[in-house]
Length: 363
Ligand code: F6P
Image (cartoon, rainbow, N blue to C red; front, top):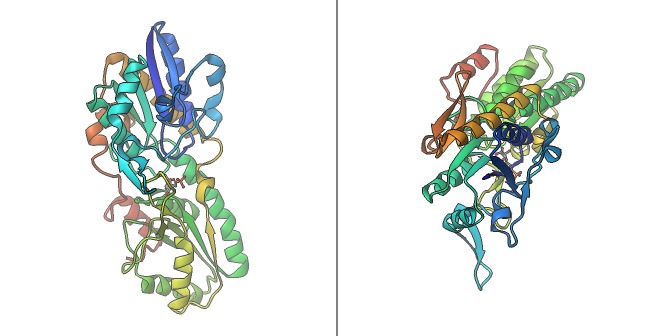
């Protein structure tokens, strides 16, 4: 029997379980493959004894409707930035991919499917360079991977954000307030811009377009002057003013990432400082956007990513990532997949179209 190992890394995302089930179901059609899952990204491989589970019909049945990942995940212990504490208690990050690759070989795996975002696909690329037969599957609610038109989880996040936005509009209208809703999006404002269009926001602030607070004040005042006594704002967590920095704090021990969140409160203060007298309320959606059951679209996308990635394994199409491009499932070199982010471009139709709908970006 040949052995396949699946890992889910980085933040959880609606659709991960649908990919796992898709891989398992497609693999079962071949009679000579067994499918295993590493617990908590590749920590299961590092563990002694290894924490690796054999996937079965019972373990995977019906999981495509469930959020999260049955394999668990982590965004700490990235083998490219593995945290080591020295004798003085200082944490250093070192590259341990060679050890990981050796462990995978020792455990007898013929191929690995690594499901994750940009960071995880960099790990896939490094493992491939160390001789592991890897296939990557793109995952992120932020939709910020350039080699695929869409990542699963994104649609679900936008649906949750739009539903939440609709609920905030009620209060904005009833109280004549300014409501600021902060959504996820570290480097890319896809969730914010989709939510702003779907929800009919007045202002949308994204990382790619630093905003001028005075332009926002003008827009807000003009709405109140016209008698539209309320304003709805969507802001991505990574958005920043033209003269300013993103709102972030140090990541947890073992993580080399900073944590974002809280820009809604900063914006609220900036608007007050710039002369806005109306009442402002802030809502930070946070992990609600990553939770719960995936939308039907994401279940389909994720399930087909599962099938595609296993078929790439069968063909020996390694060192590649499955990708959804122009309505088809293709494979792209991991190297290209991790080269650049999928940013919202300032001159793209989505931004121009949003402006056409009256949404202000503050640029
Ligand atoms: O990358 C996806 C993402 O949802 C980002 O938008 C966000 O900044 C981050 O994950 C939050 O991660 P954590 O779960 O570690 O707080």
